[in-house]
Length: 134
Image (cartoon, rainbow, N blue to C red):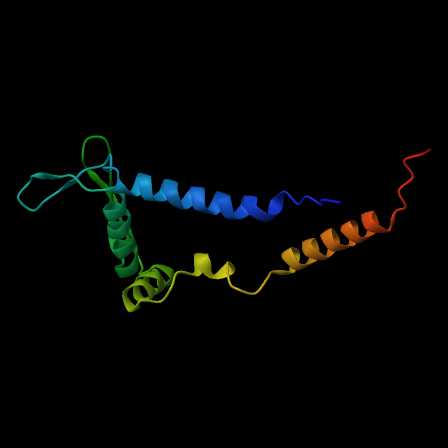
């Protein structure tokens, strides 16, 4: 009489695991160090490196491509990225992240269908006569 649906909790557990790994990796030091204005090496976390990259993309930047001798081959201007700007504005204004929006209080279609299937299976098992004498 027990119906089992394996996918119901596994998606939530995977999201939690992914979030935990993102937190761990974000706290680690970034392998690419940045240099301060005075030439000193500044160690930064992966979180800080990602935030700086996001700001850089949001504001636009000029990329200088050089060869192995250090001679400038070309400079390419990158326009400000609207998605990066939106992410920064939403975070600074305190708007919740859209990643967690799918875990709302209302059940999703697949959850409702899964629950309906489980109920029908349980009802079918109850309706089957017990023929253990055969």
